[in-house]
Image (cartoon, rainbow, N blue to C red; front, top):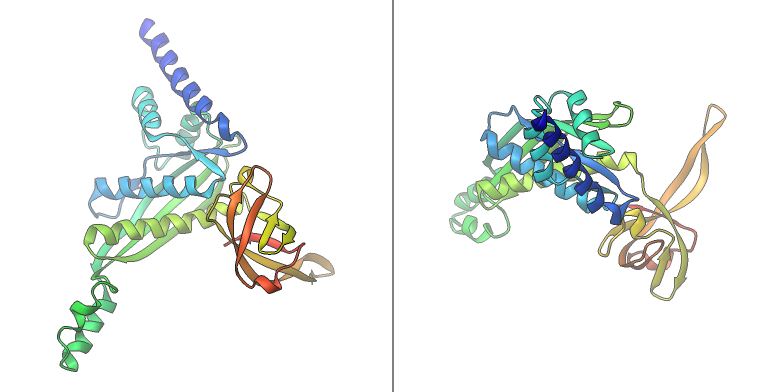
Length: 288
């Protein structure tokens, strides 16, 4: 009985520590990224480890979510004896709730491969054909020898309702100077595509509130996940789109891009990167 009480205290302490550490960004949703399963047959341990880490980095970078610390998550998994988390959303929901997370993500790597970059091979072949054997070496700093590819099948679960709200497969493909860097880059690419899918849960939409010379002010800031360096698309709304007699949206025309240079809780200062003369107050701002 004493052991059981101590176990409950341990779990509660871990969960409380995580929740308290996230108070500074209470507006952000909390995500528990469960350990991935690897069924690709490619270097089993490292594939799951690297892909999980890149997913966590991507989710953090969005500014809209906070991720449960992996060490804390691992401690609870070991202590509570959770199994098959990668393939069982119900287990993921139970664990996510223990950690105070709004969402749990489960998934598996279904494909992973690193191969010779066909672009680099083509350059080398052309060099040989025209008697320029050194062209391959000259191009090496710009065209990497290896290309990594990875596919991730994931499910994103609402821990309150237990509903699977996103179930998709995302892929990533990227080159690198070595096998390791090509694979890492492919994982980053897949994580970026995963983040695009995640954006559908929390779509970002702001408006340009004011323009003063080069300074462009928008009506959303760090509370909405914006941070310095973010590049945003500026669009202008046009005529309504009518389907079967109902207005389902408005036509939008891209007029430029802006970069966030200062982010405050409820507004941001931006500078135009493209199309400065065509950007007007009232235009809509969306994520790139």
